[in-house]
Image 1 (tube, rainbow, N blue to C red):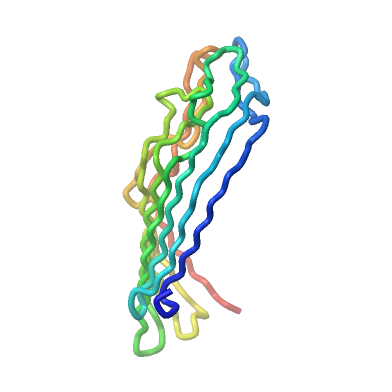
Image 2 (image 1 turned 60 degrees about the vertical axis):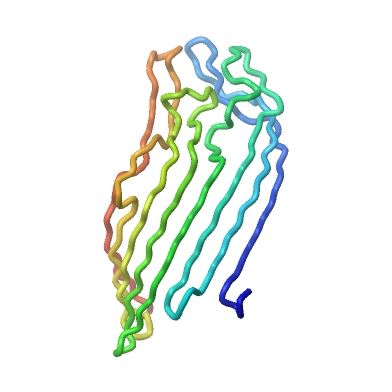
Length: 197
């Protein structure tokens, strides 16, 4: 579109998920069982745009509607209206990139990426303490490339504002008497030197 300055991709999907493996607590022992069916449908939109000379933008958004259609949990903790674990209803990404060509034919590229996801259940039991909250994460980078892009140096950071949220969790209150949670990676900084041979 717009004289090849804008590209749009759209995908819609629907899936019937049979015999989902769910972690069922039987006494003190958690066991994986094929204890559910679900219907998952959604839409994803992706855009790539040339805003101006040297300035590009990548963006995407996704929506997923996921519901159980059958649950076979003898403990009745996982219900037909429970949230499917690890499924974010909304996701989004915006990534502007600006490349400045210098007089000696080298270049500097600045990039930012913002990633968003809505809250997610970490476990099939939907334990409130183990939900991953809605969160936005920012990555930043700057790259200097010599003429021909044969040698480049990138300095950047991931999760630069150090957003922390539950990445994975297990409810063992009935067994070990504890909740277990693993958090996402903290802010990280890096430098990368690349050579093309």
